[in-house]
Each structure stands twice: as structure tokens, then as C-alpha cells.
Image (tube, rainbow, N blue to C red; front, side, top):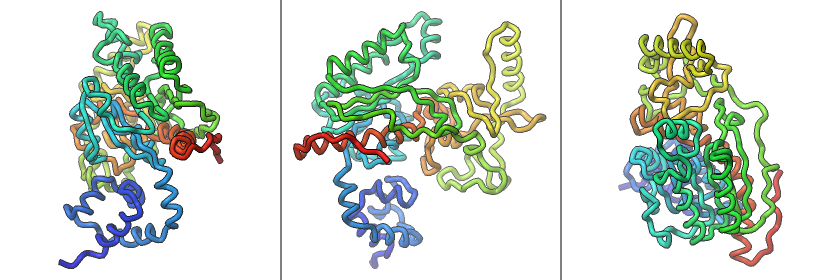
Length: 422
């Protein structure tokens, strides 16, 4: 059988580029590239021009990019938002851990890994974790979040490190760092981690990372609103096996972020057609958001009455109406219940609607190529627990020079030099 030119070009490109590099260039995911290579689906003829452009790339530059790659592991991975931020700067994921079956489905549908992927990290032997340069972990935040602590208090349940099912998972991060001694790590959690238990929880974490493990640790609370139209403050903790000159001063955070209209479905005929969504979220023939996302009369009446009740009592509880020029409240994992924290205004005489899962993905900074293979309920939970990917991508950008310096020192005995930024 005659080989198709596009597939032949793809195989030539794979001699010089990784699947991730090709996927990024053509706007697909790695799983799609892998299917093309294996002949499980046809490599489109229209990609020939793009592949030829890649083949014209400077081979020296390509070798340099490959030489500068680094290996990382992705713990408590969720749907892969932290991973995606580090892959943007040449990182290669070599191990993943995520216990939730639905999150695992979304993760694998987007990344299609062949490296070890485990569910519960707690019983996993630390010696079986692959060697890596960077450890990434968005360890569970519910034991430390404001909502999580309030709920556990009302139920008389422990929270923080007293919550044995989630809070102590930080110590699984500790045991892996202690055994594998990665060159760097990034940990992500809710802002409330700093103040939880009058600061004692965060003090234990910092003492563990700095004094017990001996890492050079830096932390900063960053609001996702710099990159997406959502106030989402999260603490980012990074550490290096030895001082490298890393500084938060190198962060480039846009002073004015985008507004909600930038991520909403367009009803003027300009909404992109996302093949793997079809008309699940948006009706392209009618140019409207699917009707199921508009609140029912009963739910809208309930939310208005609830808000009035608490307003009369002097409380601040209530729904959050969002407009095209808004920056929204924080998207939560409970969004599937009533959507009350972010209700999209549809006109004075119309009931508001929830964001669609695709809009939630955009709100987290994920591209439309990101697949949503689970139900709406599960998708809302996943995006509500995810990270604002561009925040992680920016932090990764300023971490990579320090990571590369430590890699070079270990490999070649090259003295550390301070990272340079332009």
C-alpha cells in the first residue's frame, strides 16, 4: 500500500521532534499524534505544509531544545493543568498519580500516557517512582480551604493535618522528595493554607521543606485574574535542591486581565467549531448556548429568595451575577449544584445561565483542544478543582532556568550561574 505523503512527513518530523512539539505546532493533543503514527486514524493532508515548515527548522535549535528538556512527575494530577503549564516549557512527564476515576478519564483522554499512571499514591512504593528533575503536586486543598474548613466544622469533622484522608497527603509528597531528591518542586494549594490553624499548618509545611528536606523554598499567592476573568487566589510553593538565584521578581503578570466576554460562547457567528464538542454546549445552527444551561424558573426563584433572606439578615450570602465586562468569583467544585457563584446575565427579562463546561475550561486557561469526555456534573467538579493553567505556565517559565542550571551542574559539573530573563 502506498504511503500517504502526510504520514511520511510525520514520520520524518518524528526523527527530530517529540510528539508534544508536533502536537503544539498543529494544535492537536499528543493522543491524536500517536493515533496518526499508529495508523489508527488518517493524518490529514492539510498538515503537510505545517510539517514541512517544522522540517525546515534549524536542527541546531532543535537539538538545543531537546538538550534542555527536563523530566517531571505529576502528583494529585487532577485533569493535568499543572502538567500542561510545564510541558509548555519543554518538560516531559514520566509518572502520574490521580485517584479519581473521572479525572483520570479526562487526563488520559487529553494526554494518552504510556508512562506509569497510578491511582492512590499512599501505598505506592517510593522506590518505584521514576527518577525525575521536578516534582509537581496540587495536593488536596479541601482540608485547608475556607469552604472545606467551615463544612467540616459544622459536621464536627477534623480538618487540616487532622484530616487523615486528605490533609496528611502532604507527607506523601515529603517522602517522595526525601527519597528521590528532585532538583525542584512546585506545590499548589488554596490561599487559606497560609492562615489555616492560625498559621501552624503552613509553618509545619515550610519547616518540613526547608529544615527537614533542606530545600531553598519560595512561596507566593497569585490571583488567576491576571490571565483569565476569574478571581482565583492560590499559593504556589516552589523549592530548589540548592539556591539558584530564583526570584519572584521575574514574574510577568499582566496588570489588567481579560473580562468574561472573552471566554463566553459567541452568538454572532464567530464561535469556533470544536469537533469533539459538536453541539453539546453550543448550537451552531441557531448560534445559541444550549437551553439546558439556563436556570429553571424554580431554581432562579429559589436563589433570589435565598439572597434576599440573607441580605435582610445582614449576611453577604447570595448568587454572583456576571456580565461580559466582569471578572467572576472563584469557580468551585460545587458549581454543578446551582451555579450560584457565577451566573451569566442573559438580559433584563431573561433568566441567567450557568457557564457551560467549555466556558469553564476557558476560564481555567485551557485551550479548546482540551477534551471534556465526562458528564457536565463531573466536568464542573474537575474545573472547580483545577488550576489556572497560565499561572502555572508563567511560574514554570521563571523556574526552568534554575532547573536547567541544576541539571547542568549534576551532568557536567558546571558551576551554577544565575538565570537570565529578558
